[in-house]
Image 1 (cartoon, helix red, strand yellow):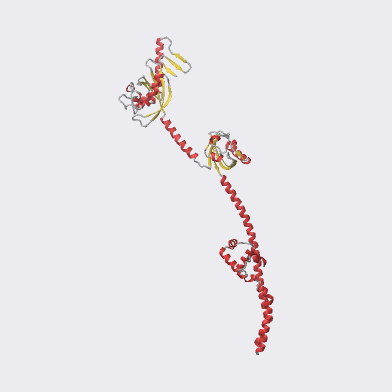
Image 2 (cartoon, helix red, strand yellow):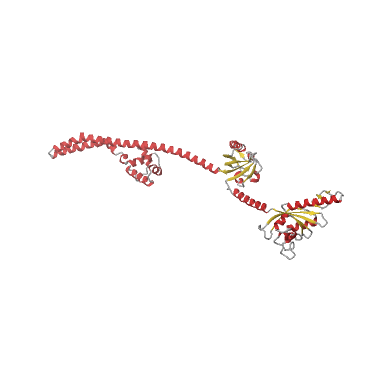
Length: 459
């Protein structure tokens, strides 16, 4: 605690009190010292950019500085003798006829209470915060810091300092609101992403709450620890992360990489990390910030898609080979069918030329009915001889099938279902079913409990 006395400066703390006496014993010299001290003291108080008031026990102003006079726009003689609230224009100083300090809200006034406590206890106060409003002020409410110092003098006065911190408080409030808004924006980044900030030595200074879901640890358990010691790393991924971290710490501006690890819940996670170094003016890395996105599900999906694609490729190769075998078999069947047709046609025609045609010519030249009958009998016999050797060929059940039916029959023989045949030939299942019914009918299998595939395989 510090007290002021016209005769001496007395510094008081909780343990001891020390007096530094300016009096020399020479009256003329001492008076001159006091005058000089008064001038210096007055100049100091007048020019300090704070509201400074010296008040008596009734809280009336006995001395003030230029800052107060400039604020109220009055000369000193118009200020002295009035209470502080009346001088500064407190909006409550006219609430009652008694003036400043007697209104219904004055009991809670921090200026009044702080000054009265200093008078009562002799205790100095330092920077007590208060919000006050003044009449005619362009600012609705000012934020002030109140400090008091007890003056050791015969008439017991208190030195009051009022520091206007309105601009500072407004800036702080704006900064707090901005910080809160952007903090909320950052922390609402989503459950699959997290933002982090760390020091060059690897210690995490800040991380968003989403870390708990992704890393398996709350931010409180992460902040202050090195990223290397938080997770259960896969060896290769740890080496990769360490390499990129060293690049950033050495001053590389940006990094873009993936890491894999087991989180606090024992889950394997994969993150895509983008980080950058924040540097001071001298180029030294001050801290590192970045964003990490959980791409575990995406990587699992991509791996599943790759497996599906590999399976499909194998299946396509298998089906392609099967179709090539079917096409080969079909080609052989069709070629055999065509060859059989040509062979039969040639045989019939040749036999006709050599066996039937001569008799027909002779028939044309005969005149008697008996001769005609004999020739007709021979003709009948020869016709039977022509047809006889090829009757097996002509009665081959497959020969009556159309090319489309032959194709379907070949696939049935290979074990294809109606749906598979339809997909291969780009036909409807109903169309394939109708062809199968026709094939069974032409092969004489209607109303018979004979499997079509087994029958075709036996031919």
